[in-house]
Structures are given as structure tokens and as C-alpha cells.
Amino acid sequence: MDKIQFVRGMYPDDTHLNGVQNAAEEADKRLALAVAGQGIVAGFDLSIAGAVATVSAGSGFDGLGRSVHTDDPVTLDLSTITRPSSGMYKWVAIYAAFIRKSYGDVYDDNNQRHDLYQDESMTLGFVQGAEGSQSGAERPSVGINILVADLLIDATTPLASITPSLTRRSKIVTILSLKSREAVTRVFIDVAAAKTVTFASLGLPDGSYSVRTQLVGSAPFVRNLGVGASNTGITLYLYHDAYPYKEPVLGAPAIKVGAARVGTFKVGSRASVPVDLFIRKEDL
Image (cartoon, rainbow, N blue to C red; front, side, top):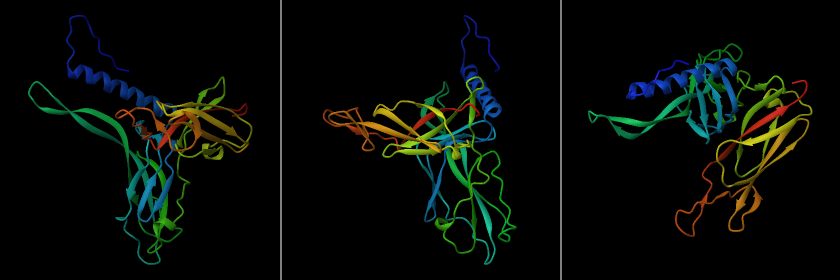
């Protein structure tokens, strides 16, 4: 990456320090594009209720190599979609997009306010294609964003009754080591239930695999991560601490020990927990 030569006696200012961050970010994006490309690493499953689409926790990379990530489900209002005329159809592409969430106050020497933090996050959007016949309508491009699913809509069918098309959805499975022939992918486990991941959904053929797992980040309320495997997929289980005895219990409620005041305990605030799967097969 591009570098700045810091020397003794030099007083770096905001230009230098922000430049270091920007250079590291650009290098990270170039690496992501070269190794992973554009698509979904884990999660981003779509469900629709009424006119609201919900996309589950997940992560991926957009066409610029930026990390698009959320630990919790994100919703999107679909009520503004324009219906095609009677007897016609149109494709609607739902996508996940990179955004930054800015917050916090910091003031410079001129007493001008700036955002102190700029966190990476994601938002949802949709693109509408032109109407046409059922077989002739064209699917719209989502550009540099990550395609979640396509919906083929007509004039009257409720959105929740339409089966999303996943044929254009791009799934990334990254090879970590050619020597060990090991693949890695990230999944999200609901804190209240088991999670089954099929090999087909990961772009892998059914068969016999060895699997290692690793929790991502801090999950102090998780006592143990259980794994079960078959020839078609992997099932993961979270065992939580149960107050007051701290015996591991499968499923909710997850109790995060951390008193707001003496005698009270907080329930785990995260809707899901990210887990990295390391999958090995000789003919991978």
C-alpha cells in the first residue's frame, strides 16, 4: 500500500493520519476483489411479509471490494414498487449496499464540528426493470451492489406470495489454503435455535467433510458451540449460560452477564452470532 515516512520530530496532522487509514482501506478493497470478488459470503436470506422485505444477518463484498455486513436483520419497504399493467410482468432486484454510519462529535481548531466515527454498515434497496411478457421481461442490474434476490411481479399478486429467484445470486466460498485444501465460509446462528447449512447452499457437492468452527468476535453468553454433520450439510448449536446456575442450555434465552445494577442481568442483545466454518475435503 502507499506509505508515509514518519520521522522523529515530525508532528502528524489529520491529513497524515487519515491518509494512513485511507491507504489501508484501499489495499483491503483491492485484496478483497482479487481473492473473493463480488458476492455474498454468508447470510442475506430474504423473506417478505406484506410489503416489507427482511434480509437476515450476513456479509459480502460489493463490486468495489468494500465489506457489506450486518449482525442483525435489515428491512426494506417495498410498497413504492410500481406494478406493471394488467397481463404484463416486471423484475424487481433487491440488493444490499455499502454505507457508512457517522456519529459522535469532534471539533477542530476552528471550532468546526466533524463526525468522530464512521462505521461500515449496509442498507437495502431495489431496482425495477421494464415491464414485458412473462418470458420477455429483463432483469435489472444492481451495479456494484450485492444482489440478494429477484422478484417477478405482475399487476395483482401479493409480494409475499412470490417465490424469490436466486439464479443470479452470487455466493463466495474462499479457498484458504491450496495445501490443506480447506474452504471457509461465514454463517450466522440465531441465538434461539439451531442452524443447518447445506453443502449445496455453499456451492459444494454433497459428501464427507471434516469441519472446524470458530466463533467470530465476542460472545460472552455462549458456553459452547456444538456441531453435527451429515453427507448433505452441517448443523450448528449454541449452548448458552442460564442464570443463575450457569449450566449450558441449548437455545434461548441467552443471558449475557453484565449487571446494569446489582441484581439485574442483560439478555444477549445480538439476534445472531457469526461463525466461521472451515471445511476440508480431499477432492474440493
